[in-house]
Image (cartoon, rainbow, N blue to C red; front, side, top):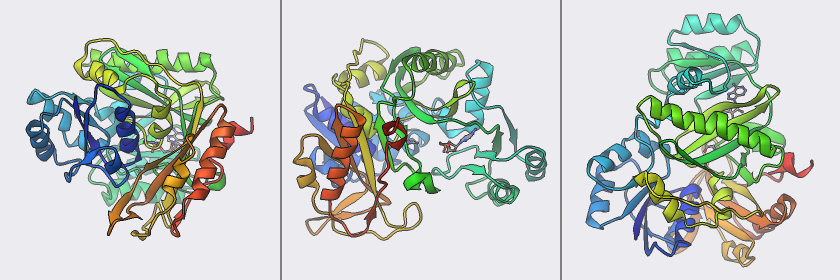
Length: 420
Ligand code: AMP
Ligand code: GLY
């Protein structure tokens, strides 16, 4: 089989890596890919949002299945277009992806179907939103109703901060012209629950936890994610089963009932609150960096799973390694703000000489034969072991083996789970 993976970050590196373990797959293309992915797949110089280019490529190269990584490609309508042309593709339609791209759509769906989430109100008028927020306790949770490159959610600790965010979102149209969802503030540890979903059929993956803040101790600005680990010991089997039934399966069924069946990976960003597990957000794709610690634990053939989901028929059996995986992101200094690129990276092979260490490349390029930094997040060093402690030790050993003068990382990935 020939598979085309669309995307180019660490998540796609992990997907490509999992595909290399499938005996059914003999050719993997990745568009645009990156320098790390190029070692395991043939990279194709097409942007992930170039739907017509990707369609032409898939046709010309007789690709059997296309797998979509990033939300930008979904929002660009890649799944609708491929399906209309009779090409097999793994991912949700633009309409189903609204569970991620429209906060309001997601909230209304949850309310109609009794899926536990924070209470909310939606505004399109700055003055009305401001008056509402000022009449409520802090912190204020403000969510822009559309894609905003991870910057559309503000948890404001002061009224000044809330005002500034509302101004950005509703007066200055910083992310485009849109609406704002104002949510009740919830408290508790967060975790990520990804499931393969094909209509009403739901196959759960192991839980993972992301680390959004840039620096140790959960300090600093929000990022795309600075590290992750799996499993998540502070969520009991009963809580996980409850989240599977009342949140993930109910949401899949709700989407079918509303005429927008979901196909692909449904990602629940969940919080364990005093009143039970609730939804913070949904994503319509694999999480990044969660995928880099979940897929290495998959023992089944991922091509069979992608096929069963994309075709809506056939069985998929999912077996998972009980052992733990923990990954530390190495990011360019300055990230998530602007950062310099082009710094040489050395030591990946040495780090991977240990069979318990895998380095997924997030933002790298090859220049004059040398591997160099090419993004905000550059590498994700994943360690594995019997326990999270051992996985953490392996990941840190890998991180210390890598040499690059412009990278920083967190030392405390997994701390919430390690010191229990
Ligand atoms: P998101 O970009 O939607 O993942 O949101 C970013 C972060 O904002 C989440 O990971 C939470 O930590 C926080 N957040 C979002 N919604 C709420 C809420 N209702 N209550 C408390 N924190 C929230
Ligand atoms: N790790 C969070 C996300 O993928 O959106």
